[in-house]
Image (cartoon, rainbow, N blue to C red; front, top):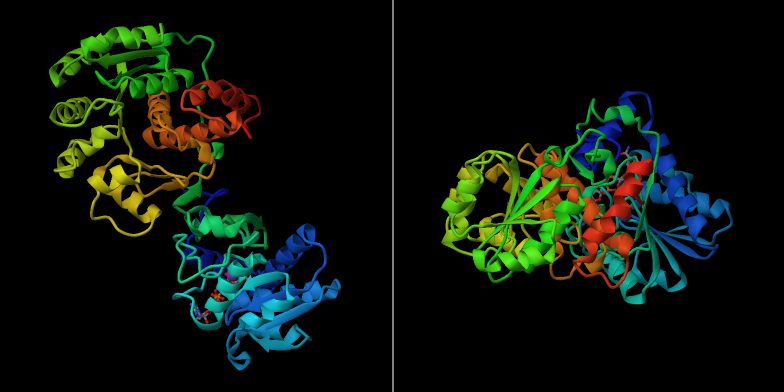
Length: 491
Ligand SMILES: NC(=O)C1=CN([C@@H]2O[C@H](COP(=O)(O)OP(=O)(O)OC[C@H]3O[C@@H](n4cnc5c(N)ncnc54)[C@H](O)[C@@H]3O)[C@@H](O)[C@H]2O)[C@@H](O)CC1
Ligand SMILES: [K+]
């Protein structure tokens, strides 16, 4: 169960609102606080200027009337445009409509002509279908004209649960949301439409999380896991002995993975690879041990030594029956296992065979293309697909991308938000596999190791800055780990 950085579904947010009311916080007060937070965020970022507040027919529109009132009180020239019939407004939205003393126009795109700033209070949690009519026209006109737009709760047209665009959505400079973020704020394309996202406390007691609402998704960060720190009495065996099964012809992936695992703290590293590549692996880094392994039987023989406690396959091992048989042999041992790239796609013809073999702590690290080869039937948004994949396979699944999702078979899911676009470079995924391996070798569980690995990988890339190549990621790790251990914060 997640609390501080939890991501709430629209349904969970509704329950949190109701729970707050049941605990004595009136919903009208929540709406006033929500509107106040948005008005304050606008005033902190934009100089006074004409503003159009576009209000929808529900409570998102109700927030809009509060914002209009508060900005007008500070001398802003405010135009209010309402979508739909004012006579149909209900509850808190109706109350705030009545508190707004200025004129209310019928919403249409031509109202944008005199407004360099738009407040999008059309739809939030209640978006039920694709944008159409005036709402669609307004969203498209905001984008076509490149107007500054501030979203209330979520840009209208973005599905809060999935981040998908329903019809259209304005690309906003700022989004102010309430209590906790929603998946749509961190998953693409929603994330790209939000701009800066501000989280406002509107008076919903944090204690509703864990009582009335038990969130199963969160934003990734160091509050969710603890990296093992070397202790005074440690020796190298206590920090784990990781194995990277490397390729014979393609050695780069295995070398990058090994470097990632060692930098993150694995005590020892053995690269198991075909004999002809042994010298190359050895020359690359004198700290690696290199063992000849041609087939599954060789790997099984090597792994009879139980000190090899975490194994990565798929880093350049080549696709096909040999790699598949190695994967099955390793999964039998109940050790920590990371399966990347071809170690997964080698099972494209029979993914069920792979899933049946998963029993111990196992992490899959596919990108979208690899994912669709072993989970070809899974539909829906990234969060849903990744969760379903973890449940089906029994492994922790890391579905990589700009918004990497990590899901466990128990239903927990985490979305990573720190990943600079410079990570789109050859070999960065190999380093990530190695980092997760290195953390599991040190005794972390698969879900925590995957979350920590993904976060550290992104932060290391961000700390390095422009010009990143995969080799830089392991080398940026020491500074990130030092910051994490010094003050619990790496950013
Ligand atoms: N106590 C609460 O529930 C609070 C809610 N707040 C605000 O209330 C919002 C949620 O309010 P609602 O549940 O009323 O939902 P919304 O205001 O998001 O929208 C609901 C209305 O929009 C209509 N609608 C949905 N999709 C449409 C489409 N594509 N085209 C045309 N009409 C469409 C629905 O029929 C319904 O009338 C939050 O996003 C937040 O901004 C805040 O005031 C804080 C407190
Ligand atoms: K909105």
